[in-house]
Amino acid sequence: MAKFEFDLGPVQDVLKELGNIDEVAPRMLQRVGPIAKGAIQERLKKHSRTGALVKSVKPGRPKKGKTGGWYMIVGFRGYDADGQPNDVKAAGLEYGNSHQQPEPFLDAAARDCEAEAVDAMQAEYNLWLAEKGLTE
Image 1 (cartoon, rainbow, N blue to C red):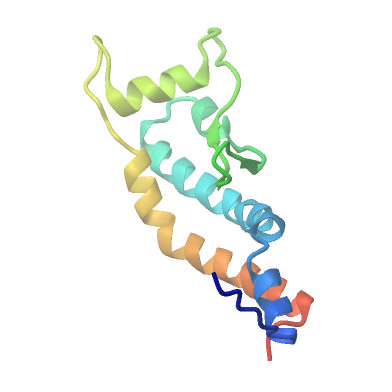
Image 2: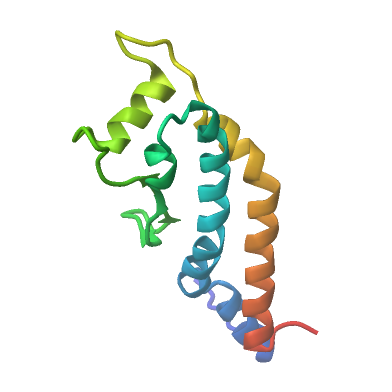
């Protein structure tokens, strides 16, 4: 079998750097966390009686999954004044339960902030490229 080798020189270095998603993905997700948090809180306001569920929305830390992809959970932390977990209350609101009809808000919040989130991630990626000297 024939062996073919070639050297791309500086282009090869740029391509390697562009493929380094593990360096830039956490930064991009951190920038989007507050945007997603705001969209969820805005959708929850009409369902709020005390504001405890709205205040419990918090972005987590970016994490790398088993398959190599990056993710971040924007979820409901803590308990309300009656000792009920806020994530259970949010699930009841989103999917309904035996006492109430579902009132979905998560998909709508995701749609509300999608364009802003994409723009923020692109801006962070462009900033990272500039820091690496890979933009003109």
